Length: 281
Ligand code: PLP
View (tube, rainbow, N blue to C red):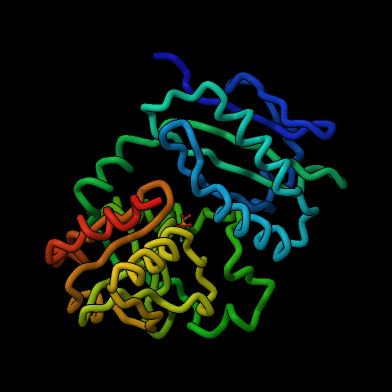
C-alpha cells in the first residue's frame, strides 16, 4: 500500500516537506525525552483545514503556558500547506502540529499528516462504549496550580493513552475522567457533552480540562439553532440520566456514548442533529 503520510518541518525560516520515512528530529529533542512540548490535531477534509484557525488559537495558548518560544501562525500555516499539498480531496486526514522544546535553544516545529484511522471513522458512525475512571485530582487543584498545565494540550499524553488501554482491557472504547470527588472532567482525547432538560451541557474549563474547539463550535451552532447550552458541573450519575452523551473532538466529531460503565444507553435520536450542527461551516 502507498504511504500516504507526509511530514513538513520548520528549518531555517521555511517549511520543508520531507518523505514520511525520513528522520526529522534529533534523538536529543526534549519532546522525545520528556514529552516537553505541545500539539494539535487538525482535521483535513476535502483537501482543506477549515478549523485550523481555532486550533492555532489553542496552540498559541499552550505554547505560552509551557513558556515555549512562540512560532507565528504564518509559520504553522506554511507547515500545514507543505504537509497537505497534493492530499486527495476524498480522504480524511489528521494533520498533527508539534512544537517541542527541542535541543538547546532551538525548538522543533513540525506537521505530520496521515489518513484518519478506521477505528475513528467507526466510532463516529457507531458510537463508543465508555468507562468512567478517576483522574485522582481534586476538581479545583489545576486552576490554582499553573505548573500542572491545566488547559494546555501538551505532549505528555502517556496517562491519557494508558487510560484508553485500560478501557480496551475491560471491553470499552474510551474513557470519561472524573476528579477525586467524582466531578466530570473530559475524555483522554475528547470533551464530554450531554443533553438533559432540553439543554446541551459540558463541564467547566476551569477544572483544568482542555477547552474543546469542537464543543465550542457545537454550542455556537446549537445556540444559533435555538438549542440552549450551558456550562454545568456534572457527575457520572448525570450522564446516566441524560437523554444523550457524546465525546467530542476535532477528528472524530461527535461520537455517541452507547454504554457507560457497562450500562447500555441511547441517544434519543439526537446524534444526527449534533452531527448536522457540527457539519455547518
Ligand atoms: N480534551 C482533550 C484532553 C483532548 O485531547 C481533546 C482533543 O484533542 C479534546 C478535549 C477535544 O478538543 P477538540 O474538540 O479541540 O479536538
